[in-house]
Image (cartoon, rainbow over all chains, first blue to last red; front, top):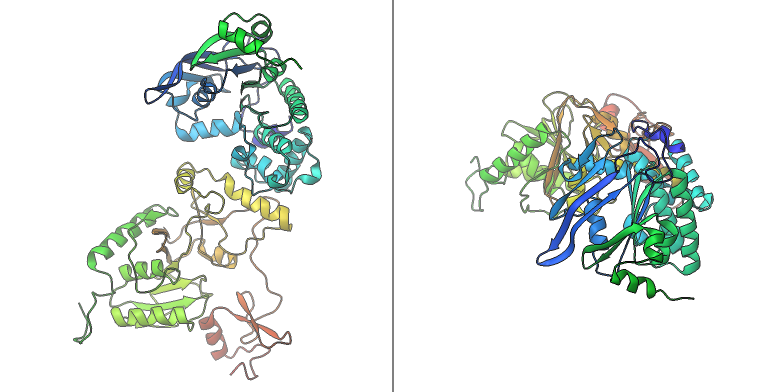
Length: 282
Length: 295
């Protein structure tokens, strides 16, 4: 990858499997949550959720609004401290660490090198008042890149990979369409070569044709880079297209997990059956 | 304490009460102990509007003693309203002797310049600071900027410099140019021109920064490294001037542009008036020194 040189102090994994757990050396999950619960006072955000995310796999978390999808995502991505439960992550050096026992500096470093977070609303994940190039370059500069020419070249390369014309590099995201902003946000997250990316409704608010392009792009990037992705969505089509495995949530609890095709074609829990059958057939 | 008997209400020495001065001194000591760190302090109302140097005045009032000699400059000049008023203020409430000569002063309160003459050990430079937070315009949340300082999370500072180059082809920040103190804290050197940044590095004088409205004090102790942030391929450069001072012929100093008439006439003169006067007294002459303006 082109960015590996500019963040050389991060050990680059030798080989990343594109298929989950295909490699015998990747026996342990990348991120593992066990018994995670989050209570908002007496109300339940999510309750007793245990999931593993394996290297290179795309895990979709689906469910209706208010089912605790986003709470779960925030809990496992250190953005929201869970009430109970542990979340561990296998670092690049092979050590498994409890995320909530790490120092904040270390956690932030992890978040801007090894992780990505794609927000539903691109304005939450972008700096709207600085240029696209600076948006992509920010993580590089935060990890010590100090050569303007190199940063700009890497940013330009990444804009190309997310299908943004290179002459837009000095434009601010405010001048971008919704789809472009979302692609820019993805480029900004992927520039440091993360191993795990969290996405919260990445296609929310985009029209259908733009959604299709974005999904196509995401699918390509995920396969090329061997990313592990946790994608939260209420759109089963997104889950079908992107994910290998699925978690169905209702009222803060996981009610069904399994391979995406299995869950969608042969749903077992009554709620999942309802969910699957409520898709409009165009 | 040392006030003359008078009908007017009298002030404590140097205007502030002793408790306040102790509080500010404690903040100053902490600031010196952690170079570049912004120490919060309970800023007082001063008899001048915010933006006129209330922070600097409080710092000066806390460190000044009867034996001190005070110099006050405003954009390098000793004779502007702000400088004259503050000098008169301390002459009245602390009865200290004042000077315009850089070498004779023990405390120099400054707004937006560092004197051209090299400062020596034992001198204290007090800066008036409007906005102490270098990250303010990049990250509006105070809670977040404090965290960024604590975690040394300064990538954002370079984002600003990147934007400068992307838009202008060079780093266009010419004042309040961010510096890194002793390899740790990123600091706003107050709106001094970046021309003055190199003078802060390994300075023999103690540098104190007071922001009254923002209630922050920070410091650069003597012999401390002050490095201006830059990129490897766009290194830090100071402002350059094409011509010498029109009055004293000085080169390598910071010049002000003065418009002379409505027909495009202009001249460049030393921003540091004391430096310029001394040079002229020593016989240096610029191109316009003989004319009406030179007198």
